Image (tube, rainbow, N blue to C red; front, side, top):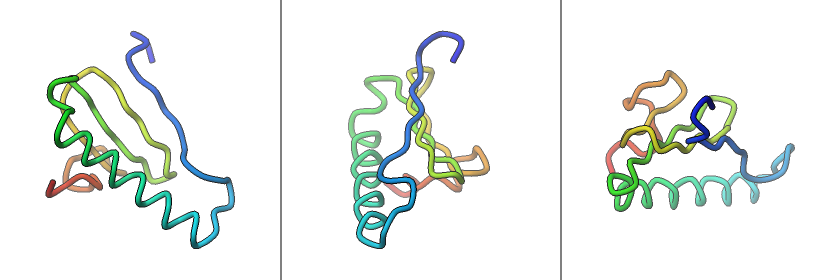
Length: 78
């Protein structure tokens, strides 16, 4: 990330169990809730890629999903 304004990470183990999957989804939901309520103030971008990797940056208030559009964002509808 050219301007050091982003962070990419994964949640949970490499081979998640069903319980891990549930906890991962709960955490992603909490991230979306944070983005929906506080993201604009932080100029926060939140993306979740098809690989499950999460991207957070401070380059604009937006959210996206696997196809890099809001329509596939897990935050859609918040």
